[in-house]
Image (cartoon, rainbow, N blue to C red; front, side):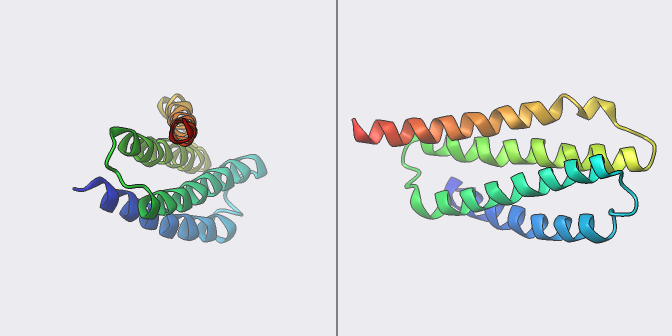
Length: 130
C-alpha cells in the first residue's frame, strides 16, 4: 500500500474513531468510569484526533519521495495506535474490574513514537531550510 494513501486513510479512520469514541466516552462511559479514568480516556481521544488531523495534513502536503516522510507518517500512525488504543483498553478493562496491566508499558512506547514523529517533522523543516 502506498504510504501517501495509508497516511490519508489512517488519518480519516483515526478521525472517525475519535469522534465515535469521544461520544461513547461522554455518554456511555460517563457512569461506568471514575473521573480519573474518564479523564484518561478523554486524553486518548484528544491525542487521537490531533494526530488524525496531522496525518491528513501530511498526507496532502508531503511528497513521500524521501524515507524521512514515510518515517514521520509511520511514527504518527503506530504511535497513535499504541498510545490511544492502549489507554482505551486500560480504561475499559479497569471499569470491568479486569485491568490489563500488561498494556501499561505500551502507552509510553506509543507516546515515544509520537514524540519521534514530531522530532522528525521538525528535522524535516529545518533540513529544508539548510
